[in-house]
Length: 310
Ligand code: NAP
Figure 1 (cartoon, rainbow, N blue to C red):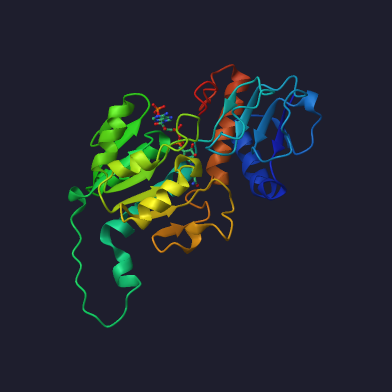
Figure 2: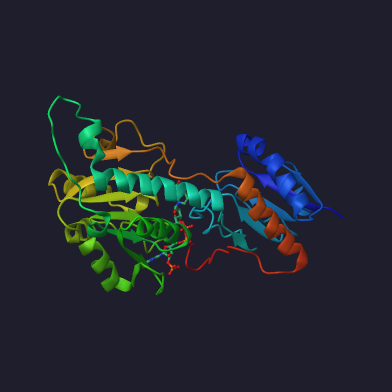
């Protein structure tokens, strides 16, 4: 008997995922009926985007797991109708994309490339940046993405610290946790990268108090979630010169409304939530492996802790 897998996401995702998912399921030895239209009581697994039409999981009486297409789960984790395991997306392609985006934006600020790229004005202006070993970078969130970025930056020679909820031991990274650890990370961070999930505990973690701890002129890079930053406090800190620049990929409201002050601010770079995308081929392999595990009675990978919210 094939397993019935409902694909619950926007139509354009189906076009991208149908073939890679069928291939990955077949390669994983799973005989599957993958479709966007299966009677809820016959569904075994739900491949899911939180912005899909499926918001009430009650009718899916025999489903074994919801397999999220996204890394962030804030829009589904609190759904009280969801009583089966929820797996988030951990995808090698997505991780690699985030490493590239973060490294690129860290290097932009580290080298001050804007000075040359945006100022071809005939003036022989020499700017010698410090070496990476003299540029402290702090990464808030030392999970899958934070650790991958931390390792890449440390590999380039940056002085990297990372902060997480639980203690960590990552080679070449100064690992911090707890309130004291956050203060230490902020105080030393010339460049800070936010790779925390959005939870009640992380909302507005970069507020006026946190911003005042950072070295004057520090740079904030946020590919995590918009809610991590108190927007007004950031704008004030930018206007006062306490923060030198903010490169923001994620926002409380997306798309960022045209009238939002971030767009026009000369010390803010807005990118439209493109830091990293789930890549269909590699993501399909992760989903297929989880279906295989479910059918073999093995534990699912990348389960979300519903109490912690990520
Ligand atoms: P992850 O593996 O779950 O890692 C989350 C990290 O945050 C962990 O180190 C965790 O600590 C830490 N953390 C969570 N709550 C905390 C708290 N209250 N205090 C201190 N540390 C806390 O997640 P991930 O895969 O790296 O993804 C991180 C986030 O990136 C996602 O949630 C999503 O919002 C964002 N994202 C953005 C894009 C984009 O295109 N912009 C793409 C993908 C993901 P522990 O290690 O102790 O659990």
